[in-house]
Image (cartoon, rainbow, N blue to C red; front, side):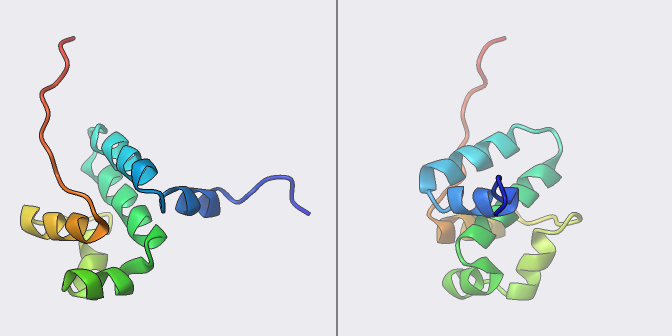
Length: 99
């Protein structure tokens, strides 16, 4: 029996919890590389049933969701908002903390 759990399985189980998923997405947004956020969002989508299930819930096209969340993805603000809303999240703006 393996002594450790598979990281991806552990991550996906944790991301099913709304608080964990929100913290994960916010941490990814803090990175300078926008691809980090898209990868994080893809992991959250996978944890919540995958692209097909979320496409049906959000009325977005499954194939376009795969493209949007790929390495070269460039989702529009509207599409990103729709996808996040279907997961139970929303985009927000906050003032940066003083250095």
